[in-house]
Amino acid sequence: MKTKKKVLNDFGGIMYSTDPSFTYPQEEAAEESIANNQQDLRVMLDRKNRGGKAVTLVTGFVGPEEDLEKLTKTLKTKCGVGGACKDGEILIQGDFRDKVLALLQKEGFKVKKAGG
Image (cartoon, rainbow, N blue to C red; front, side):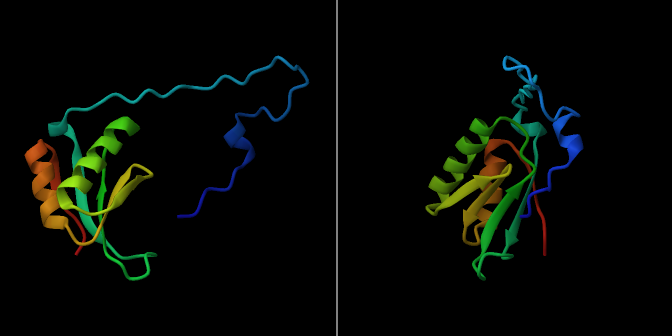
């Protein structure tokens, strides 16, 4: 996935300060946990940019990174395969769409199969 090129607007208009004690105010976006039954997840099979290898992709998770990592670990353990969580998506190695769909429904998530 390409990273977005930084432009002047990304810096909020401040480019340089001569004040050595100046700190640019950072906004903390604290994401709150949403109940599982309010999450709308999509499960799909992805083969793009992976050397022809199939990956089960789960998208649409909203919440803190720790909860995403916890869910990823649970799915990887139940499927008995490797995987990762990147950019708010869960990657499970192999074609485990049906199994992941069933596991997420059991956890109480609203899940749909996406893609072809």
